[in-house]
Image (tube, rainbow, N blue to C red):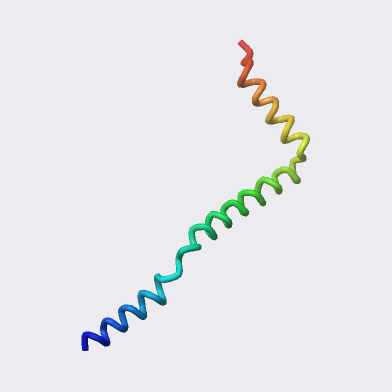
Length: 67
């Protein structure tokens, strides 16, 4: 009876938890892809020139705040 339990335990551990080496990489890739799509969509809807101009204005205000 012990051999059957051991065999079942080995079968379940190999089938359920044995192949998760690449799972983290896939998750990071999906997150990075989603963020990239959101950034590209934001640039396309607002315009790249407006986005860069707004960013440059924010940086200029942060560097030289008006009194």
